[in-house]
Length: 238
Image (cartoon, helix red, strand yellow):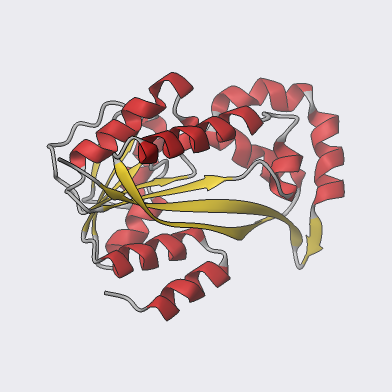
């Protein structure tokens, strides 16, 4: 089990993967599922850190990259609301910047699935971006996620009130993203959701303006800041 000092250092670093690794170590987890794993970078990091990790994502193209990034790891083509795993099969479940991508009418079911596959008392770690910060302001013309991010927080709070999870921690930290130029920023937004391409092209001039105004010049490029909230929940079962 990791020390509180290591966990605090991870928060200070502003690096989401470091925060998750140290949170899971502190919780004593071993077998971890990354829900909405995308290209599998977190799964690869967890495996490198000694965890047994698996991932799910509903995007087959993302899973192709995930399998290349974490050879030998188990990946499943599945949405968060229908996870193809046995009851009580994991020591921890993680959503990293993915829970707000679950349709609002399926968020409750997604949390129910996380509770089902996690053993009693295991951590459910959800990292969600807040609807603020320079990164958020720059991306708003492409997709304004204010409402969906709020809905994600409401769904989590409702699940805690229902007794599905105990709240062990709720911390806000800030992460930094660096880009060589605005096109790299836009390409990243589209990689997360290809449906954004049309909006990015339609609002190109506004995105460029906001990127210039919101970003800070950095060595070799520009940086944008995004506040994130980490919910550390403990699975409760009868």
